[in-house]
Amino acid sequence: MNVTPIQEANWTVFAAMTESAGLKIFLADYRGRRVLWEGSLPYVTIDHQRQDVGPEDTSAEGHGPWWSPLGARSLFGDVRKASFRGGFELACDFATGPYRYTQLWRFHEDGRLSPWLVIHAGGVHEAHTYHPHWRFDFDVDGALDDAVEYWDGGRWTRIAEEGWFTATADRSPEGYVWRQIDFGSGASVNIRPQHREDAEVFAIRYREGEWPPFTPRAAAGDQTFPAGYAGAEPIDDEDVTLWYVAHVHRNDAFPFTAGPWIHVEGFGGR
Image (spheres, one colour):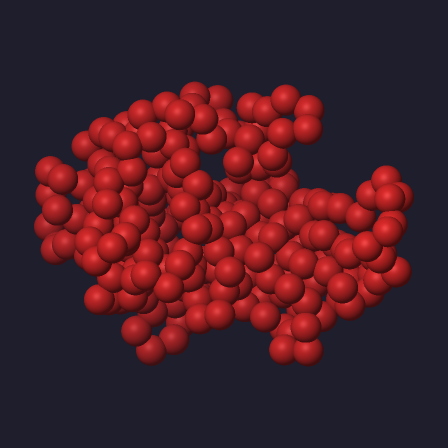
């Protein structure tokens, strides 16, 4: 674990390699104010569609989702830090069987944060879909007095209880789909998917004892993580975790970079 903070481009962050949730960022401050308690990549699941499946096929043969943990045992090389004009990035490579990934955390001096995953070519065959799951515990000026909203019908709409919210063509004038806002200070964390990315966000109340690999509260046959966590608990003024899930279909355009664009606003210096 890196107990020495990285201080650059208006950010102060800590980083640590986990056993199964990739490179974790924690205690991240922007301009001296807390933005992120913890962010990680708990799962990258893969569905392999069998190429010989037809409409009359009733076979129960499984084809996924498969999960290979990204962490210390699948790390390929070292974690790298590099500076660029207006910011810095942390990068690391993982190799799990036929799959290859590069995880990136990019921090910009204007408040942008880019937690990305480069998915390289590979897999058992061409017909497969990747589902990277990011988990963010944003603490916008503290864990409480926050609300989660999504852009709908030309305005921001409050999310009162746990739920699942897909990205649609409806965006704020700045291009964002979801946000977590602190009403005490007016500061916010704004989120949107990358261009052409199929993605969704799960807003889930934080629960004590959550730790990778984040076993879901779900009965056999129910939806998998993170949907297995989502119930109907209120999340207004509560500590909330946001799961960003992308769906990346293997095609000739690989390698593909998945993950959200995040921009913090209302964080003046102290």
